[in-house]
Length: 177
Image (tube, rainbow, N blue to C red; front, side, top):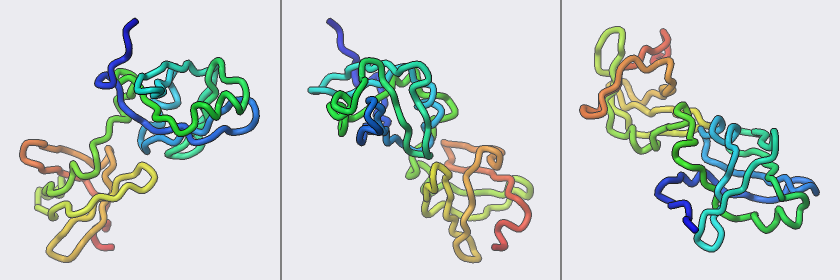
């Protein structure tokens, strides 16, 4: 019998507690993985060092926040069965992580040089990154103090990983705040 290698998987969170009496579980997961969690047909639960697949019931996943979901698994029909899975790490196969959910770690952006895409001028360097419910906000050290700038796909015009530079098309007046 072959086991699923952890190297092919991504730990996304943990089953916290049962929700109700019919075996539904509350899943706490990494912010930004909502699409992957919502479409998952199978969650891999670490049990005795092995990843055990648990299939979701039809329409068995309901996202409740940016970091939590209610999950109904096949063969888990009551809170007693659900309690056996609580506190256990939950994984998804890497291939099941939705492309739009692949977000670099916050520390990835530290030290990047931020440029205004419209003028090409250097705005400053990223000194801190905060994650507010799945929304990354960069703290940029500028000549005029620190500025907070949201890191949104719609604002990114160009980025160069090798040079650690990013060009953003910022809304007018954002840096004046």
